[in-house]
Figure: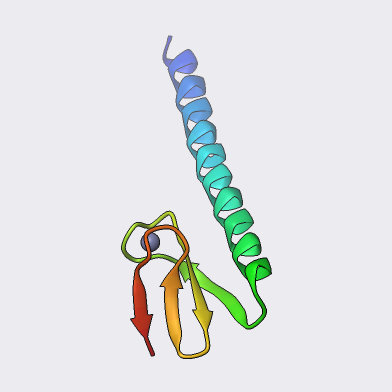
Length: 73
Ligand SMILES: [Zn+2]
């Protein structure tokens, strides 16, 4: 039973890793889409406010593509 438990724990850890990777891929896809929206924009990282949006830089400001968070540099 203890061996079975260890295997289940490993599977659970793998599931968590896959879930994290899926989130990362989805975020990267949004970042690529944000970059394609207009010239001069550059995805710089995840949004600090909603954490699922992409923070893009355009000239002297940063803004989130999801929640509208804006920050001027
Ligand atoms: Zn946001």
